[in-house]
Image 1 (cartoon, helix red, strand yellow):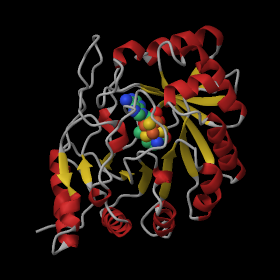
Image 2 (image 1 turned 90 degrees about the vertical axis):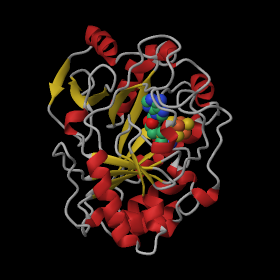
Image 3 (image 1 turned 45 degrees about the vertical axis):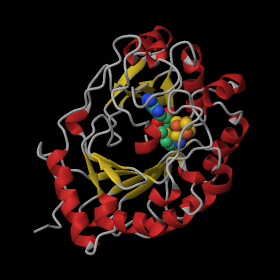
Length: 334
Ligand code: SAM
Ligand code: SF4
């Protein structure tokens, strides 16, 4: 017997937020995220547009009120706009918010259509404003397109949040400037610690920058005041008096944030990961491709609630540490 009851895990956390990866492909190759020669999934393994849509409806029926589309780079998927439009029609009918995380390379084209479809906010990943650093870090010389995409998002009236991974010796010195730039455009900004997900060419320990250290450094020249704003995610915020903007910190390594976890993640092949930092998974594609997809999906979601772990166990404590998990962030999305 399966139910249509809201999703509540064994630690009584109500799961209301789905991060849905629509592709593992990307037009950039950020060095901390994926190797240059990443092997992408065969297209046949990836959920079709109809499957993604049916699955999202199944989640909404179980009380998911917020969906963030991610990847890989969501906007490299050809039928992405159709999915955004279809899910946009559920806003106000079960779904409260539809958002996206993007690298912005294609936002110049898509900012307007996604806003028209009902998306109000986007998270844009930007680690540097320096073209050479960008080209080295993302292994593609795409900063001009990204800045054009960001400008298009702003012009379309999308609320923009900039997400920046803090990287020792790479963008560390530039972070105050990046924060000042984001705040001058009325963008919120969030700093993220690099997480040990998937093999990449470099040793992440070399670039791991604890945000506690970054915060102390910022406090030498700025006044940071704790702000009790919550975005429904793990970020903790401060207001910067000098810029008048809000700054978030996501600190999976220095400060565990699992108590209030309200989310699950699904990969482009329909694997539900109950935790970004764990291997507990349920195969939703098998459910969707079964003879009775509705019941099978509900049963799979019930299993997910039973296996969602209490917390993740990431550490980056010494050089040469193996990744905590074999899969890359581009599979489960950010
Ligand atoms: N391509 C889109 C983008 O970059 O915004 C969406 C997917 S990307 C995997 C989502 C976020 O994950 C980005 O902000 C990226 O910087 C972050 N990310 C990727 N690998 C990471 C890692 N190992 N540790 C921390 N953040 C990571
Ligand atoms: Fe692509 Fe985003 Fe990963 Fe960069 S962080 S390689 S843009 S998926």
